[in-house]
Length: 310
Image (cartoon, rainbow, N blue to C red; front, side, top):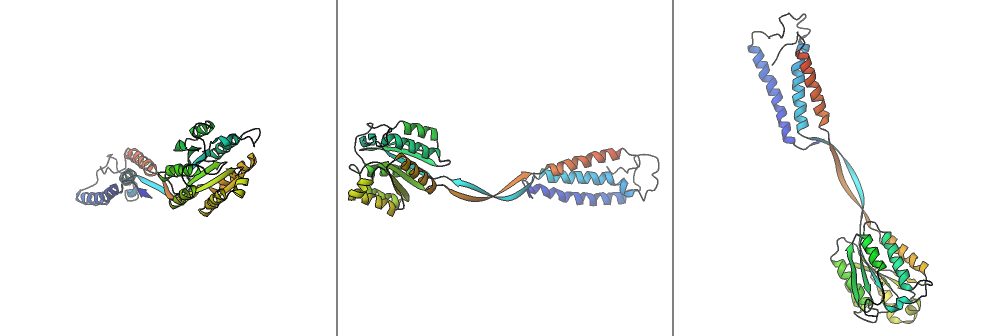
């Protein structure tokens, strides 16, 4: 048990002092006054009963002092909570994303749907959105407002940026957002269907991101042939793995969904155990008995044979 105002408990020391002062006072009195002129039969046997009102008042005062000190009863517990991570989705909106090899939908339609499902699967993470083609532009800063994020994903369109595929610039833009984000775990998830042909060198950006402890995952949309035949694309995805990220090739809508589910499991927020003490005030444990003692003392004072110690 703890007390909100423990210094008030010092007032309890006044009770034994008061009892000592009262005993000295009674010794100097020629006789104890009675509340009634009729003699009390059996005075010795009833001495403790006669003193009961005084004891009750003392108990009442002591209990009130303890209640005023703010007693609290607590218990130690462990709290498990999910520590959210910071994620930026970088989505390719170059003209090649209009290819309809996910018939009846095009690549961008499927990418939008996959990104939306990924967002809906999160609970406590902070997520931002970057769109890129020949340039990269932040559409939504890192936020926990998933409704705003989903609307921004739905609004992604080909043609709002200069055409091209600036993968390095997209990663750099996303990483810059993450540098200022709270939390220890920071992740870029990039969806693209092409090789870098504009902007910054992705290899340099990956090294910088790794140095800043930002992990990069890449989802290639039907890039299997490019990975196999183009050394530049192959080196890029090998570098992603070297720095702790993952690369997925999605030739179908189902592949994209599997990649999204895998990333959802890989990038789960950590469970953090935090000890704490939950306590509750228990002043009524003392205040209520104090009132009972006071009420009994008042009632007993009305009985004729009780000695008046006031």
